[in-house]
Amino acid sequence: MNDSWPHGLMGEFSTPVELLEAARAARHAGYRRMEGYSPVPVEGLAEELDFHQTGMPAVVLCGGILGCLTGYLMQYWISAIDYPLNIGGRPLHSWPSFIPVTFELTILSGAIFAFVGMLALNGLPLPYHPVFNVERFTLAGKDRFFLCIEAADPLFDLTRTGRFLESLGAKEVVIVEP
Image (cartoon, rainbow, N blue to C red; front, side):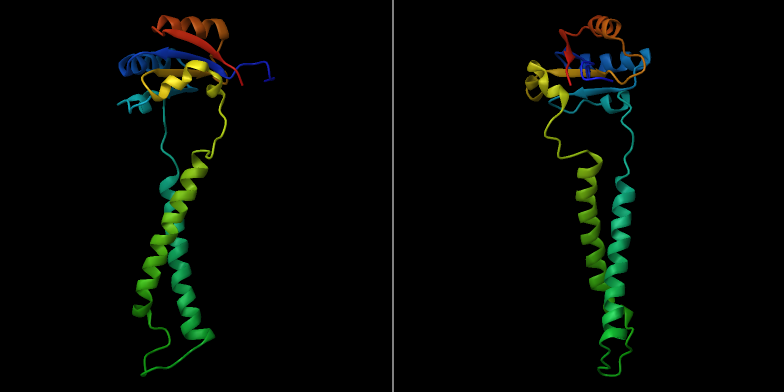
C-alpha cells in the first residue's frame, strides 16, 4: 500500500452496547481486521474482535525456568567447582541449601520476563498510532466508543465499508489517515 491509502475507517458509537453490536455485525459480515476503543471494559468485545490468546504464559515459563537453572547452577559452580569449602563435613553439592536462592531467582526472572514480554507483545511503547489523527478520538477516554475497520482487511472497500459502518448506527464515520 502507498502513503495515500488510509489506515482504515472508524465509526463512533455512544454506548458500549452499540459498539458490541457493531463489532458482532462486522464479524458476521466477514471483517476480521478491526479494533475497538472504549473508556470502560466491554464484556464480550474481545471475543467479537477475535482477540486471541497471547504467548505470555510461555514467556513467563521460559523466564522462570531460565532463572531456576541460573540460580541452581550458579550455586553449584561456586560450591562444588570454583571455591569448594568443606565446612563441618557437609557435601559440596548440598542441594537443600540451594533451594531459597533458586526459588527467588525463579520468581524474579519470571517477573522480569513477564514485564518485558508484556511490553514486547503489546508493541509498546507506541508513541504514535494512526487513530490519533482522528480529532474526535480524544473522546475515547471519556464517553465515546469507536470501532475501526482496518484497510488491511481483505473485505475493506472505502465506500462499501463506510456505508456498512453507517448502517450499524455509527454517529460519525471518518477515514483514519496513516
